[in-house]
Length: 69
Image 1 (spheres, one colour):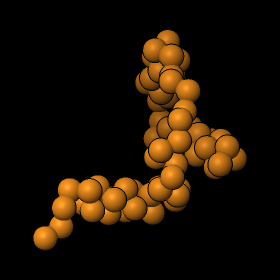
Image 2 (tube, rainbow, N blue to C red):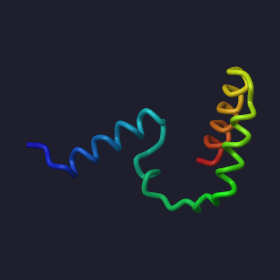
Image 3 (cartoon, helix red, strand yellow):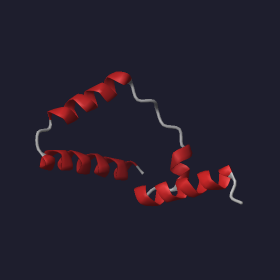
Image 4 (cartoon, helix red, strand yellow):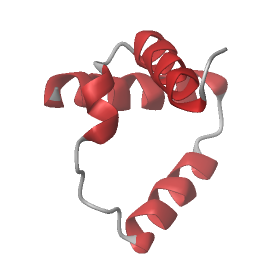
């Protein structure tokens, strides 16, 4: 029988693999996002008009995240 802790560990490993990050990344403290920052990010996202523009935005953010590892 698989207990809940084993299930959680398995899911975290799966997520980490898909995202390309170590499992420890889920336990690191990160500064809390300010509500105004999140709102600005969403406002800008909704102003991007094309799928290509959104893809470029996601690629830029992914590059930043990879550089911060």
